[in-house]
Length: 160
Image (tube, rainbow, N blue to C red):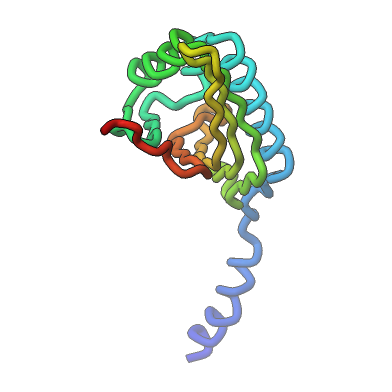
């Protein structure tokens, strides 16, 4: 019985002596994600599909509005290449970045804006919000899921 009682007192002591998990500097991780967003904006401005796809994980998915889900680097590059053909200008702005205590996943919420010249000489403009899921792979933050939608009502149909 004494051994049993002694082990009850020693177990918590031994558990307390275990090395603590390393503390994650979530503020530094947030800044690393924001740096990736800055790189993404630069790549968008330059229509650099290689640099754009480098911000996304190999298993990433885009979930654009009014389109099917796009999976993987080739589909992501093709999507952004289409923006260049239409001379679309897009800027994203993170509002909130939340890094998990584990330091290996994060969620970003932000806003976006788009402008595009129209054949009639006018400019189409849109804006909205987005969510992006990030994961840290081999020390680099990469976007795993990217979904966005417009804050504006769809244009009225003029077909009659």
